[in-house]
Length: 155
Image (spheres, rainbow, N blue to C red):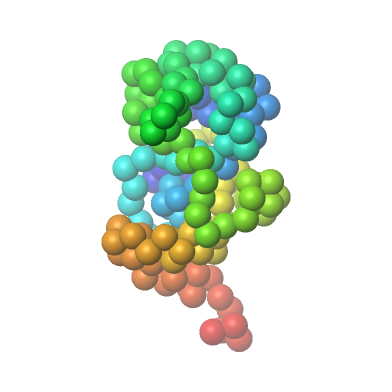
């Protein structure tokens, strides 16, 4: 998808995660963008089933970066050139468990990769639950996108 192009390092990371069998879901506004919502985002939020999975560090190395497992109040994350847009999400508030959300996730093409993303309805549910100012600002665009998808008989 041209509106969500990945840089080479991000593409290598997502490819390596998939090749190593690491379960993850792309969530947040990146998922909403991939679902056609007219929004923008500055980062790519990844939700892992288990952030302590050693395959994540191996995938980061495959991509030319590194994995920071997190400590204290510091969450886990990726480091390395061109991986600064990747944020690791430990919990998606207002939603079900990772396993339940993974079973609902959509598989979409991102550039030349197949990636699981959180459905737009679930992105909206999380934003409504959090009610942060930046989330509230995005809600009209998310709701309008969902409404535009409905058939006339559903409206």
